[in-house]
Length: 194
Image (cartoon, rainbow, N blue to C red; front, side, top):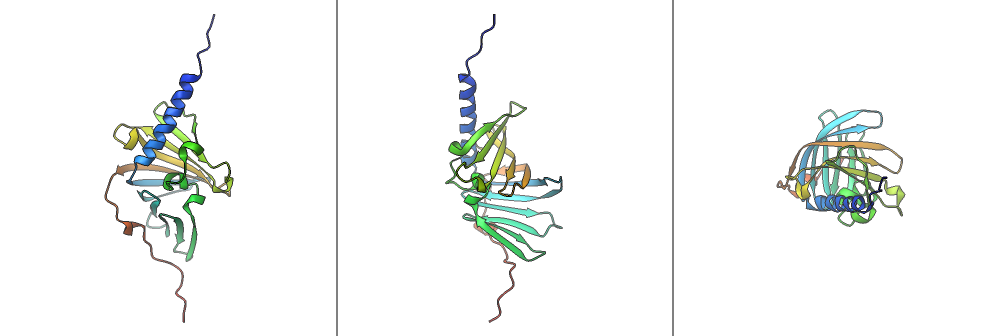
């Protein structure tokens, strides 16, 4: 004779893990890390990331990659210095909004995803009313020394064109002093002649 275990404890743990992930995200005020970015073709780029909540992030790529991605708190800007191209969009309209935008309700739009390891917590964030904003899946590792007891290890973002980007973090440091000047950049557009 076998008895089915009630599903409530698993559901309660899932809600608890989602709540812990939201608490961990909100607990990150500043952070720096090395990152490895992997695209869907397996191409890897590395660099340094600096984050300051609310809304600010900077991805500075390895020396031979003339690209900079910066958010000033409201807009995400991608600069390609090689072709002198600049793209700008609101952070709330990007998958990174879940990480940066304090207005994004991760508790409401997030759902726990299954993982292969009990120490990992994976949260997928997607606004069902705005699928064009894309999806981000944040992956945390249980770590008592990290803010909220969960260390942000990586994320996978899928943008509106179905472009998949994976970011893996290492050497995470929290609570470091970060000046707002970190999120300034040199504009690449040619000056207009008068």
